[in-house]
Image (cartoon, rainbow, N blue to C red; front, side):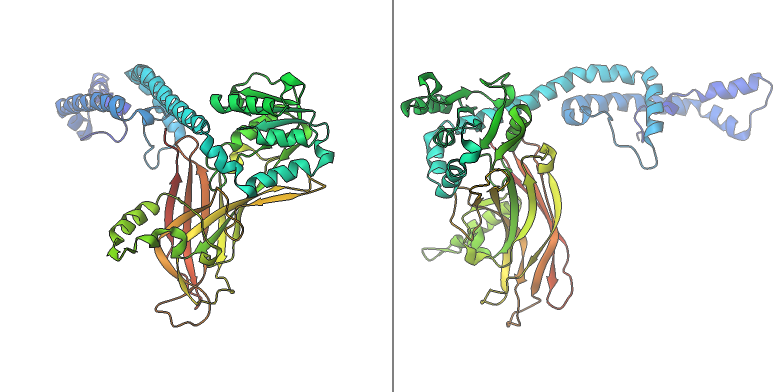
Amino acid sequence: MHPVLPDDPLLYHDFDEDVCAQQDSGAGPSVKEASICSTSTAMQSLQDENMALRNTLQEMSRLALPSELATEQPFQLAEGIDSDWLSKWQMTAGTFGVQAERNKLATTQADVSRGTDDATERINEAYFDSYGFFGIHREMISDKVRTEAYRDALTQNPALMKGARVLDVGCGTGILSMFAAEAGASRVIGVDGSTRIADVAERLVAANGLASTGGGPITIVQGRLEQLFSLPIEQVDVIVSEWMGYALLFESMLDTVLYARDRWLKPGGAILPDLASLHMAAAGAGATGLTFWNKVYGFDYSLVQQELREDAHQTALLKAVSSQDLLSSSCLLRQLDIAHMDAADASFSTDFVLEADPKSCCGPQECHALVLWFDTDFSQRFCAEQPVKLSTSPCGPQTHWCQTVLVLRKPILFGLGTAEAKGKVAASLKGRFSMARSDQHRGIDMSVEYSAQFTDGSLGPSEVQIFSMTMSS
């Protein structure tokens, strides 16, 4: 037996005193009051039991529930109890030692906070260290869709770039900084958090005669932008950054770009790219990459496929999806205006409808996945002479971002027409998509609630799945 509310003041109230006080005043006790007096021993026993349980629970909390203890309220309010009552209770409970117990927990809370900071720092270190190897930079630079989009946006808009002061956020080997210099920028500040790659970038720009130490326009700064007190120049005219991650927002580098915008971009300055959009479409089994495991050199490998599929029901996959695997038209999930958005805008929920593609000539097929990709635009707002679009759509050339695949727990027969299909055929998928920051730093969580709209007009049951993308520390 334990109280609904820890440290309920009523448990420590001496009812005997109330009754005896009434007796001393000459008022005879009622039957109910006499009952209370006769059970005082039992009440004291319950009080002692509750105190012991309270102490035990507090000790367990210190050992096993540090994250919950870090919250303002040590428990969830029972139904029907409002916060005003809780505040009054907390003031009273303080006289019974609750505040003292909270003070004892302060050290534990600080330790939890430090533990979270340490985990975040480990992920940050792993993140920046991963960009200290040439392999990843070769992958990015050799991605022609990516690199040439940035090159064209910088070099084919002289009205924007001639004489401009440019900040390259996450400059890597300095390729975008050198494009900016080639386009006529007067000053270029390239910043990178990887110590090794910043040193390489500095030597590369010097080798190409573009370093400020040799009279060129480029200065490389090593450090995390949020931790830099100042830059060689106080304001810039243009910020350029290749910040996009898988599913657009993985890695959370956008936060750094927004920080740089607010801290160093002059009013009315340009940010490249300035628009980003996230898209989704329904896809068949081929998009998952799991069909490889049906048969391997004639042997049944379906066990491997099943294990991978189970994991894919909660962890997003990265796959190069063929346009032939798409079963629906695409749907715009989110558009971000990098020039004006807040960091909180990167977390969102939105409704979607995926209509079966009328161009499909294969009849109804099983929909096994939802596919995500993004586009970024160097729009006419800043690149008036030559707007540029960078698309990672499966309908165009593949990029190093590939596509992000969310595997459905239950495949849905999907398509148009009256093919000889067993069971109902869905003409569309309707639902709600959400994306938010993960509890793990630089990760993202996605949730999809969806149901099938069948060709006969009926609506299928609603399904909900949650997917994660996280970085290892």
